[in-house]
Image 1 (cartoon, rainbow, N blue to C red):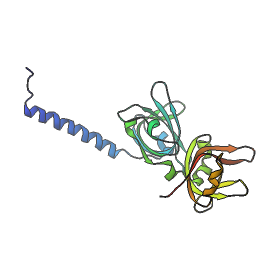
Image 2: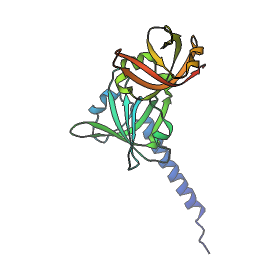
Image 3: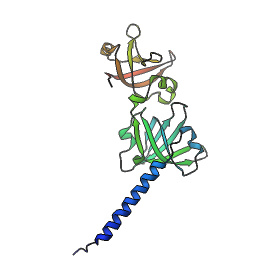
Image 4: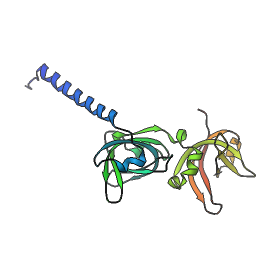
Length: 218
């Protein structure tokens, strides 16, 4: 017959677990959000939070993932090594261009500074279609070249068989190429373009090689 644990011990275990959870949540809440460009100034092992755009993601055979986050305002970057936690890994949830918040510990080497985190401490603040603007792409294109991106803008005909995606202020634009001629029917409308950002060396300009163009309303 299995011995019964006294009620007072059950309560003690419950409150101990609750206290531990509250301490963890308190530590997370008090963790400072550090600008990406200042992470290298933090102490070894310090727990910090950063917010930036996902510009690169690699999955390693070990199960760990390497993330590159970009501060779009200053162009600074930080590498994050993310281990598996309880929640799904970033590769299962995040897209290039998403704005992420990462909680991690600072690690310095002779050549770089890295944040070590796990999947439980990586969250999506805003999806790329809400944060990745044409102006941002134009000024930070080197980080996103060759990557699949999702960006919203106004599709405009720019001559015969030529389309451009403009922001709503009509100040910034990127040429759009697609093998689907039907997308020209969306000219003049706000659309979501999903495609690969390419630097066209022949014209020294950026190009969105569109895989999909959809009407957008939000």
